[in-house]
Image (cartoon, rainbow, N blue to C red; front, side):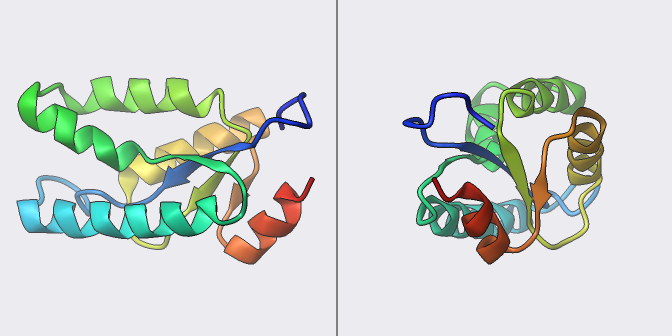
Length: 120
């Protein structure tokens, strides 16, 4: 949790992107749309949200390999106060959640519980 009580908490959004392996562009679009919708709902809790799904737009123009993005995401995640796990199968999400557990970063699956935790 952030040390400065006047700072908003930073929440990392964990969720499916490609549903495992190479996914059709429509699947990635649907999953990114769901992540944005969930991220917006989380912002209503008074927190900042990092949505890694948005990297797909960068990757579409300047492709990087999967491990590059995982390393990038875990680096960002290491600076977050907590994570929120969306439903759905996600090998990358499983790795991100395990990373949180190893480092004591709370992972929420219920927005109301995150909202209660994030109260000033």
